[in-house]
Length: 435
Image (cartoon, rainbow, N blue to C red; front, side, top):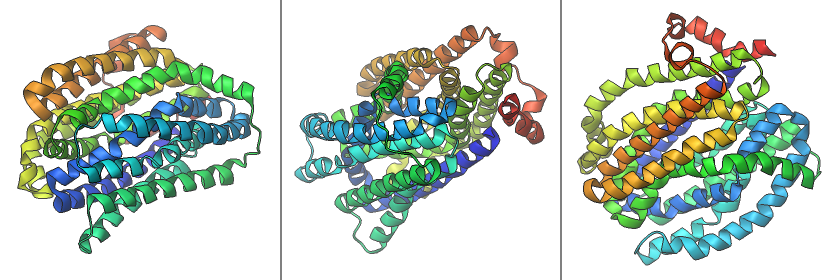
């Protein structure tokens, strides 16, 4: 089962990456580093606010739908009520707070920033619907819901560019359309696949929150570790520096596709068979495969970094080479950490995963304060690498101790069968056999 799910997630992520690269290429060519930086400032905060407003419920939804699918109607109904109430509150708070977090920007950027906040309730509801779909292993439906946003973004940017109308404003409106399409499709997917009835339930909400709030600080720390560099750049750096950095981030994220697909598919599979020793083997071998993949792709990309930036985006983006190289290493560490984190979540240890991610967030914040003013975007990239490394180490040590395993013998020691596709497929079927 996990092999099929990981394949679906990988195809989805690869398709998203292609669409993202199209929009990044077109946006970089049309807007330049300065315009690309302005667009990031506009779109950066709404998903952050939506994630804050979620209170860990999307992860709780994945967990409980994997464990007890009969909760679906109650969870869906609670999601609708929660989005209406909390989503509107979040928009109001964002309108007051966010303008003070982005520094001194042009009037047009500030206006677009406020307009784009309409996406906050949609992003919150989408994450809850994805939790329902992914928890029941309907990764195809969840994947299409994610894809729609990027399929609107990529071709939309390209068409606007060809017409000579791609600006920060038209790009912002295109992204709003994409978010709306994704959210509506996710709602349709849940309705079509799960057939939920209207059953809002306070006890169910309390149960979801009990799991969610334990994972929530880790989710915040997770996002902080992943995006604090961009948030601080958005407040402190010029729009040119932000534009250079976001391109380096987008390129480095391409290397995480396969490992992230395994990580996303791992959590519900482990949750469904957490009492089996085979679930531990599944986590360990998933981690090793993630390590192998990044060791294979890192050296050639490190060497080719300046040429990729020049060819794809133009000579004005070559100064991002140093940051891009450090982010390539950071992306590999992040992916391996995500695999271990999702294993911990599946085994019912959201608190332990929270400790790992919170530790990483603290270390990242300190490193950014020290390195960002001295080294610019390269310092931001190195700070991310340091934070991701802390997350991986803490999560891995916690996993080994909780499951009473040996770090080298049970988790990290390479095995010949790891590298053979037939055996990897066999590994990915372990959780199904455990049922």
